[in-house]
Amino acid sequence: MSMSKDDEYDYLFKVVLIGDSGVGKSNLLSRFTRNEFNLESKSTIGVEFATRSIQVDNKTIKAQIWDTAGQERYRAITSAYYRGAVGALLVYDIAKHVTYDNVTRWLKELRDHADSNIVIMLVGNKSDLRHLRAVTTEEAKQFAAENNLSFIETSALDASNVELAFQNILTEIYRIVSNKALENSSGDFPRPTSGETIHVTPLPDDHKEAGGKCC
Image: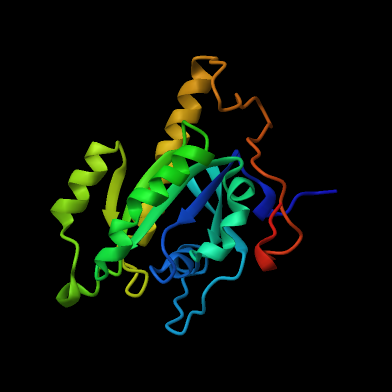
């Protein structure tokens, strides 16, 4: 059985989106994977994911981007959601300081449940709302530096820096993985061999797992 073009990739990386409800996680996902934005976007129920492939160093990196509800009642999916994730975008809304305040709690959840080597990027979304800005770029940059995170501000609405955010985190993950492969390290990331892909979690049949049930 021949593989379709979409199935041809060198690496498969699972990246999770986390942050409060309403910060724009779903629109970041749809903007990157489908170049779509929905102003009337409803709260995500349970878990969904989408995929997109990019090129890094002539290698095809297939990104599997997972999005979950930010509401507390869906916290039960935590361990399954983070399982196999090699990257995380920790998202807040630059116009709502409370979503930035909660970044600390989300970061703790990541540290508690995700792999210790996970690559984390702090993302200040809705940069188009400059006139309503409640979180300064400098404040967020300092927090990111103190916690060893990369940082970027994006707008899913006008597409500003969305491509760059995903390109940067996927490239950083790729560099770590390829360096480990070169070193023949016995670290957390598997060593790719010819024709072998790095797999993360099993793929559900549907792109949506309703009701907070995952994997």
